[in-house]
Image (tube, rainbow, N blue to C red; front, side, top):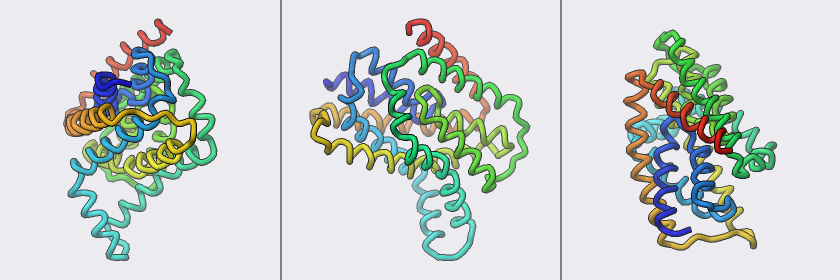
Length: 260
């Protein structure tokens, strides 16, 4: 992998991690377009995922600090309740990660027809949000678990994690700003967990490493584009403009299916 490919893939990761268009699906399409094998990108995946985690921490630093401060008081309060809801949301994806990891990894084989089909599923979820009745409610424990199920399905390439979780929250009647905040904060621990898993795998004898310059370029690109996409997504959901991303997913998904 050279630095130009790293730049393109880093931008793809940062932008699509938070915009509702599926980062995993776009990276699969990017790998196919650039002719990069999946096993060549393990170390790179660790780097760009770390960059996106850092971008979330920067954007939501105040929220994260308040949650940690409240949790350290060792009493049941608003912060500990919110943290508990985040933990509940992690249960479905945790089950998938522990018991079905090999099955999940088997679908990341460059099958762009699958990616295209799942992008159409993402588009359908985004379009469904226009049928949602806004009840301006907070995230309940039941909502957190259902949103977590949506996140578990987003392990498939082409199903957007942010799109699936935010759409599910909106369909449940959660206030737009609250479900967007919850969607971004709930992904921190799963991404960190996946990153540590990739680090372990990168120490395997047959792991392929990437040069320092491509890693640095990819990290910077993913971090800066992640900051941009995260802030844009907050405004997009607030203004109810998800239909544009639905149209985009239909367009890209249809092309992927056709070319596949």
